[in-house]
Length: 540
Image (cartoon, rainbow, N blue to C red; front, side):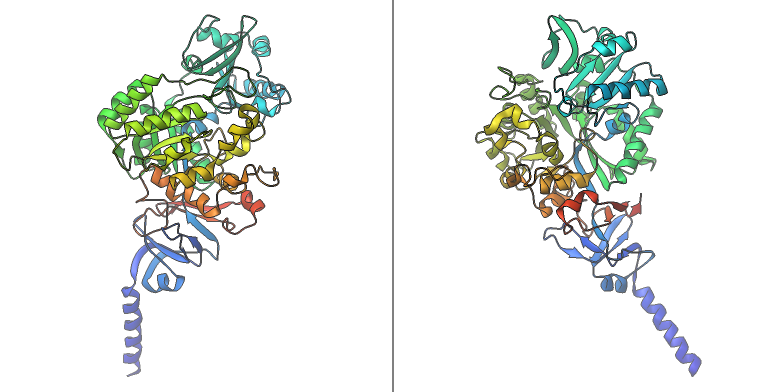
């Protein structure tokens, strides 16, 4: 009788265990921000086949699900995998193979880094990026004189932090066949007293970039994998790469299919004839990790290099308006072509003149359509009543909060006291559009998404300046900032039904943090660390 009783107990326990749903993993005892429609919080969730299959309390999840992998979060904060809505993922990886000039405080420091790089690497072409004369005591553009003395025969090309200006030595200019008489639409070749200074603004840079040594396939793969490691360590699970060529997109696809590259990539194709002819005729490409259905277009240059197209002259340069880098009719025809192909158009627009032109073109091209989600990348300086264009469901502002805190030291010098009120106006953009997609534009800015979150909320630099925040009225709430880095960024990529929140049926992309970014003291937000990043429920 005793044995029968024990047998019944064993049978009961076994039956109860079998009543549970077998999944791949369950996460319990967490502080989970789901970022669902109601911004609900929960304690636990279950994962199977790379997707969320249940959310709820720890008790409920343990009662109904069993798994070989049980992760006890011990109260740590979990949020959806972060999405950078505008970055240069591939270029970040390539930059690891060139001279890093970010953070240089003078041209002398630029030269020291170049000399050290040359001594170590012995390249046949010195390529660097990251200098910013606005951070130097002498804020004028450098010139090619010293580069020419040290490297009379070795070509040198150094791109400014924003990617819209370049300093070249004479050897590089000669290789690119750039002379005092060279004329290129959409930018400027700087001269002084009838001689080249070595500074190129916007489109003329392409002449030099065309002679850069092509990276080998091995170097390209290394760049993508280096970028992946760097980004996943910081909690990114999807990147929107703003401008890629077909060969790189196909390499990304092959690495993803080989399970070597886990990062999900929203690939905007670069506005080049060969890319347009191939992709717009082929149609959209969509896999679990790759999404190709948009075109990245440049309307103007950058504010820091005075290439952004303004309605009125720059406040710190008489009679200078910046420049469009694409012809008006070319842009309008391109918009019609992209629309006909069913693709999304994502246009870089910094100055108020460029933004007005882009927004008017979008409005006319998409008239009587719905849900097209065409993006204005940066939407940096908006004046007059142009904010109202963003009321359209067809238009989304794609913004980068750290641009505001990087540019705030000199931006008013460029545009004056009136125009600055409509610059970096993220809250106004949100109020008009109902959502904003947040990114970094890395490697122009740092990759760290928690600096994005901090800049959006606090509107301060890492030293806490300014005390009241830069134009704090245009700061975002923490809820808005997290949505902009998750569900709204996913929406801007037509991916909000598959990612961007911790909900049943979506990819199990999430990150575990060392502190609660929604509650921690504001000044501690930049100190946030990622304990673990999961893509498809697998730790990276």
